[in-house]
Length: 308
Image 1 (cartoon, one colour):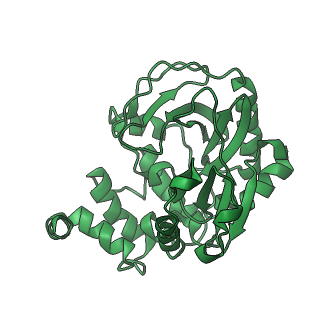
Image 2 (image 1 turned 45 degrees about the vertical axis):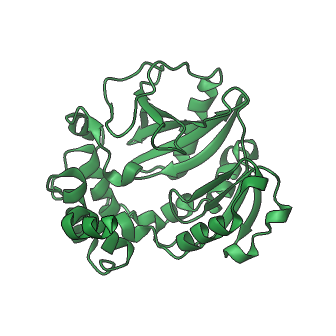
Image 3 (image 1 turned 120 degrees about the vertical axis):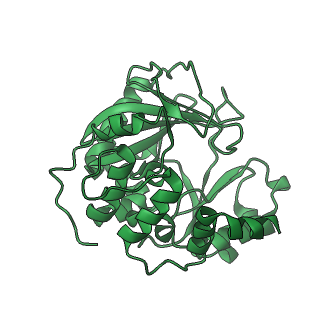
């Protein structure tokens, strides 16, 4: 009943629910994004002359449609691309890949593993003890995810044509930090790494921590207003190699903007993913003027527009 009342009374929430149900699939991307941006950011989206970081990511969704991004967004295909470019040692080992949930052989999987869909963002199941895993619940969650096209939710074009599949990966247990995974995310603007975003414990939004740092590890004076700050944080001993890996990975995609996500687990670096539109281009900065300052780092003038 509470959810129904929220659908009735909250226009933004109602728009998101109807989006998930496919009501707006036929809306042109620019029309859809202007409506969604208004609800998410509480202001109009300027696409003719974008100024802010978030506006420019929306512009890129419409105007930078390199077909190669589809392979880079595919969580299975990208592994071979990265391995061929920088070596297989940076790849989290794959335990299996399936077209549907009924084919998953849970008995053959180890006690700890990770399941995720290849075609979206967020549908991740982390199993730390198979004896405690609710397999039926996992199947329902993944089956629902397989039936969705992530592109329609916020028009992140690179996901539109990714083949929906499920992969199982080895569970990476950090012996120094067994409770939370730490992610290192490098922000590249026009080929330059400008800063990093380090997060801990993203599995649970209520306790997760995120902070932005310069490339030397000093915390920057802005943050996300929807997460607690991580604060003082010591970069890992292999940070220099991590930065070199990120720069090599950038050469693979050569996108106007991309975030390159890595892990450092027990002294080893692992590739996570290429993220072309962090937070879907609706990143809530604090202070708010950060959005425009970061927008100045991204030059769109040399980009050849591609037809939607």
